[in-house]
Image (tube, rainbow, N blue to C red; front, side, top):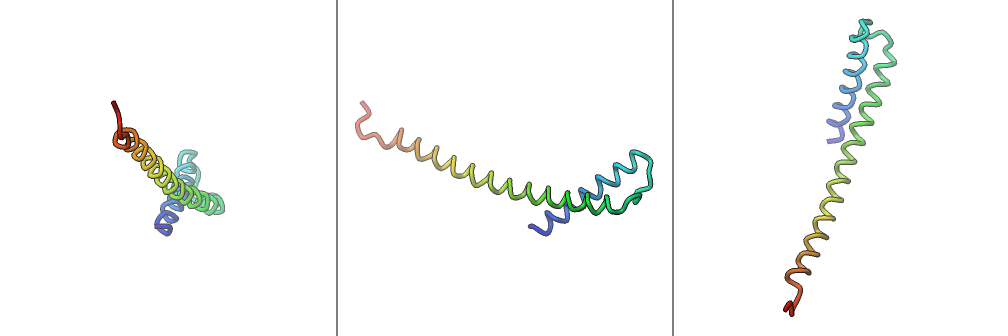
Amino acid sequence: MPASATMIGALLGLGTQMYSNALRKLPYMRHPWEHVLGMGLGAVFVNQLVKWDAKLQEDLDKMLDKAKAANERRYFGQSSAN
């Protein structure tokens, strides 16, 4: 997964830079270092996005477990309700 996320990010950065040059009607490879920088930033961005999504899923699972336990205590844990 990290390799595919890195490749997707690099392509996103490259595509963004090429699109930016195309909009301004400049040659696609006007400053090649900008493409390398865009690819690096895109790769970092997508990798951080994947990490954030995994952390978010973990936190959501914890919150759902806590809510489930609280509901079970509330509705099934009472021995003398009335």
